[in-house]
Length: 204
Image (cartoon, rainbow, N blue to C red; front, side, top):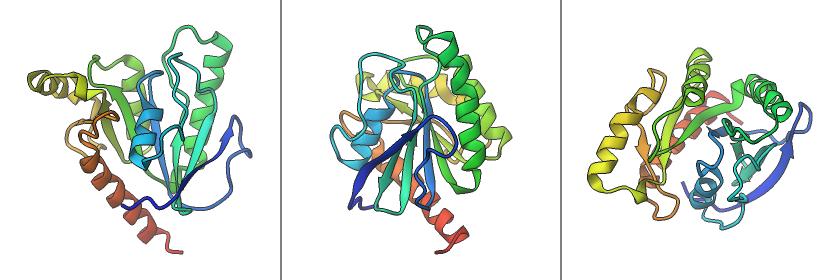
């Protein structure tokens, strides 16, 4: 897909605060500091559009990015960071569950973002199970793969394979890098297919 325009469209903590423009939604979900913002910036070709931070847990709202004035990238708050307050972590679950429930019909694809250098965690498995239970299509995108050697990448795919369940539209995790562009052409193929399917299902 050619990205002709992209912009930050707003942030939301509760129902009613989301942007109201229609269109398919691509959701990014993953642990804190896994590189979701960097991945958005690289996919859209705009440095600094999605703000990155060296402090995990900084993203505490749902962030919306309007692409080609026709669809959204949606960055969910990172999960699994222990230093975020218990109250904040307790609020994230209902916020994310509520958003996914409200946007279920618009959701074209979810990107379950993991770190290629790390073993999958229980929160990763819980998010996969939530997507599977809802019948929501998703791809596992394993970031920071440029930091691994060829042999290490093969090992990482095997280690992360359990995260890609039956509902994954890719048979195995995609190894990607926001720094070098590794794997992003393949990821875009899945995005294009999902967005086209969403448009056919909801013409106009």
